[in-house]
Structures are given as C-alpha cells and as structure tokens.
Image (cartoon, one colour):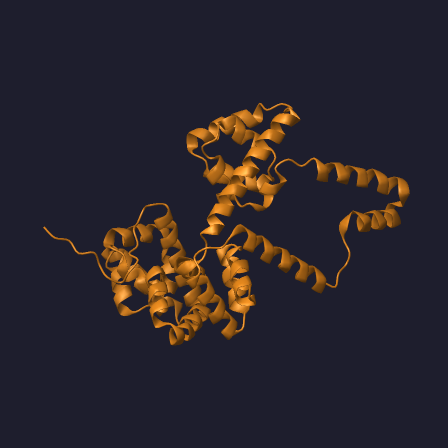
Length: 331
C-alpha cells in the first residue's frame, strides 16, 4: 500500500472537522494527491484501516521524545512527593479506578454517536449507561432524548441502587460490540466523492478554494462532481423561500449583518426580501453601522450560516438541492 493511500485511509478514520484541519496543514501536492485518492476509492477494508492506524501509532510513538507517563512514572513521582505509605494508598485507589470503570470506551465516542445506539433502548438501560458517563456528557445525552423518555430516565437514575456487576458488564459488552460492528461497516464504505465534499465543506474557504482550483487542472469532471455535492454560502440562492424563512429563525440579525457584508447583491435581496419591511430596514441599518470588516471575520460568519443550513437539513426542516439546477414541475 503506498503512502498516499495510507494518508487517505487515515483521514477517513478521523472526524470530518479534524480531517479537514489535517488536510489544510499538508503541502499542496500532497493535498491534491490525497483528495484524489479519497474520491476515487469507494471501499476501505477493516484490515487496511487497522494496519494504517497501527503504523501511525508506531511512528508517532517512535518520534515522540517524551518517554514519561504510565503507572511506573506515577509511582516514582508520588513516592518522591509523599513517601512510600502515602504513595501506596493513592496508587492502589488509582489502579482500582482504572480497572473498574464501566463504559470507559464511551467517553471518546461522542454524544451523537452514543445517542444513535441508545435512544431506542429501555429507560432502565439508558439510566444505567448514563450513570457511568461524565456529568457533561450525560447532560448532552439527556438533552438529546425524547421529552417523555427524559423523565423516565431521570426517575430511574434517581432511584437506582447498587447494580449487579454482571449486569453492567453484559450491557457494556453488548453496546461496545454493536458500536464497533456498525463503525466497521460504515468504514468499509467510506471514501468517494461524497466524503471529499463533506471534508471540504468544513475546511476554511482559502484551503477549499486552493484544493479545488489545483484539482481542476488534473480532473475538471471530478471537481464538478464534488461541487455538486457541496453547499457554500453562495448556494443560499438554491433555497426556496420557506427554507430561507426557517434559516432566518435560526440565525440572528447580528450574524446576518456580518455575513451579508461580503455577499452578492442577489443574496442580500433574497434574504432581505423574506423579512418584513421593518425588519429588513433594521438589518440594513445594522450592516451600515458595522462599517468595514475583515474578510476573515465575514467568511467565518458566513460559515456559521452554512452550518445552520446543515443543521436544519439534518433535522429534516429544509431541503437543499444537490445541483445548481432547480427542480422542474409539469402539470
């Protein structure tokens, strides 16, 4: 397997925002080559991904100059600070905590991933899982549950007594097995043009533009296909009035006033035209009051608007066309 394919597989193993950040740090030629590899290859086997991650871990470990950490280093540090007796008690407590932390694998899974797997579970099962999560993550999970189930879960957590360790272990093993299986299935179908479009959608505009311009010199048809699957600020013109009005509720005036400073007149009129006369006047006044703004600030705010479009689309509240053409209807 060549290095370009390894780099592509490694990027596909990361969350999209992180993959976009890594991509933006690579040399231009590498970015073009890796992007082509991601776009042209639809399937990644489980074995390929495992091998690439293991190789990366080995390389990272070999290149890391800090060789500290672990229980031995903690033992030495504590004994120097607290003496043998004090260190021994603390280390024993740490060892017990590390060996008896159910659902530890969930701490890095992400709230959205976890919700996908537990939202349909029985409230008692959800309560058991949530009782072993960090407080902040548990709060996020709770807010993502249906209102009726939230009450049931909270009631069961409040009334929960000591749980049989075998029950905890069985639930933990079942959930971990299901999540691992699903993620592996998703990975085997990773890559392709849709993945490139998703990664480029979360890169900054300059990186996005540079990649597409250079890629177009090699494969203009591929770039056209990628662009059809992307959504950028200028694509607000693709939204119908109903979608624009939903977006206006999601994005407040202070955000619009900055985002529209760098917009075309056509986009400005599209947004202002979906406001009441009074609201449109207030927004125009706010834009004028801001004065000159840095391009980077305007583009960052436009990206926030695009993110709002994606949230509404994911929630099924609006539909976004995947091509520049409008749907045609016949009687």
